[in-house]
Length: 146
Image 1 (cartoon, one colour):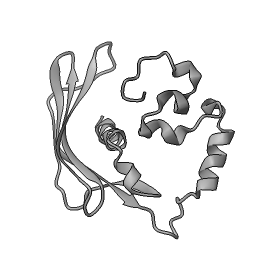
Image 2 (tube, rainbow, N blue to C red; image 1 turned 30 degrees about the vertical axis):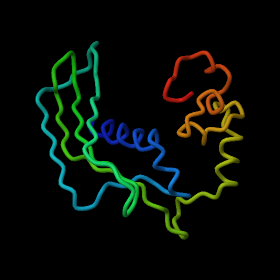
Image 3 (tube, rainbow, N blue to C red; image 1 turned 45 degrees about the vertical axis):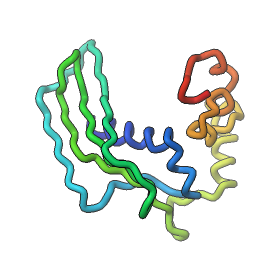
């Protein structure tokens, strides 16, 4: 569930467009930022509503794009996880980074991905949902994408 908190904050950074200030970067935790996690109940496999509530406490661009947030995980109306001071930053990859991909390599992956239907997946965080997800999603109400 902690991984879901990190992914939610990463999604928020993409939604806010902070990735556009970089050219080839990855998400990293903010160094030397202590985090506090309190679990107030066990979450067993069940039918119920699980909600992640994000409260961004700080957001900035220097020295790298970053955000610090508190996240509550709520199960059936009750807070079961309280995550304080989760910090994520977007850090440029180094030139010799083994995970760095060229634009050509990224476009080749997208082109060969049968799920992409030839669409431009890189445009998702720029707010063009139907362009990035295909015409099947033109009529789906995704206000944060279109």
